[in-house]
Image 1 (cartoon, rainbow, N blue to C red):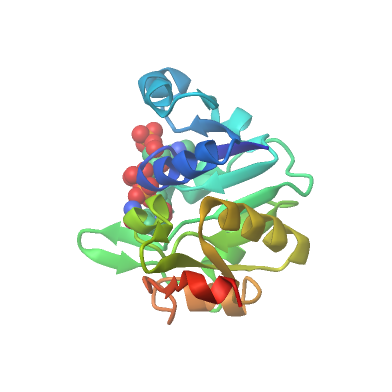
Image 2 (cartoon, protein in one colour; image 1 turned 45 degrees about the vertical axis):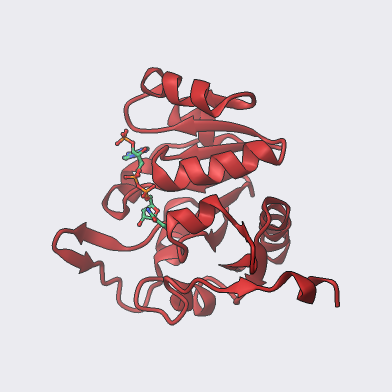
Length: 203
Ligand SMILES: NC(=O)c1ccc[n+]([C@@H]2O[C@H](COP(=O)([O-])OP(=O)(O)OC[C@H]3O[C@@H](n4cnc5c(N)ncnc54)[C@H](OP(=O)(O)O)[C@@H]3O)[C@@H](O)[C@H]2O)c1
């Protein structure tokens, strides 16, 4: 599968390494253009390439991993989504220093993202984990549990299958409204790092 990333920082790098190891192609993008990512994609190795935001967004599956304040800009004027999957890994930090969490009222962060990407099948995933847990999903004590939420069952299943292949233990927590609320900043699953012991998988 060809996977695009909008954002090419800490989270996108950890995700891209997993995807490349699993045999996928990854097109990474940022705000500064492909030339700024040439050295990085060379380091990532076979299957990695640098693209424009539009090229990354045209992939079958797209990871959104940009700072919250630039989400509208990062999703602006992209090709029609036409049902392609958009994984929302963002957290609603309006500011990191001091820490300010964006208050969207009744709307969850991923519902906000979905409004900015009409036609995309949005799955919230990876945002609850610190990047070091995204980078190493399989641990001596078990697999890192990957919470995910979304309103499209098939899209969630595709993301879960990808995450399983990476070595995570995927766990569906509901739709963008109910599950997304649990997963976003302030929700009970935010920054929860759970391991599912490997023997359980053989039961
Ligand atoms: N770090 C973590 O442990 C962690 C874990 C889970 C979730 N998250 C969330 O994931 C998101 C990304 O975090 P991160 O730590 O990966 O951030 P990061 O290392 O700062 O990387 C952000 C990336 O976004 C790019 N970017 C900025 N503006 C853009 C735009 N308009 N269009 C396209 N790309 C743009 C940046 O590229 P430029 O160089 O061009 O600006 C950079 O490659 C955040 O919402 C964060 O809250 C972080």
